[in-house]
Image 1: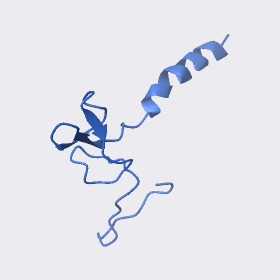
Image 2: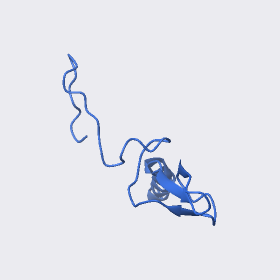
Image 3: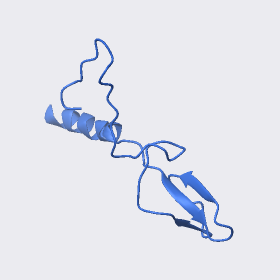
Length: 80
């Protein structure tokens, strides 16, 4: 009987492990305007390319992790 509350607790914690959705560049079929959104703005838009970004302005690629190397006292955490 003690396993059931533990199972319920673990199921509730699962959504907390999810990360943010990536941003993509979308191009208007009407006039060629390019915007950055997580999901399609509608039928008149197509994804410009398959590159994912992690910021609202589509300047930071999703795969890149910035780590300061010359900051005094900086120690990278294991596993990151």
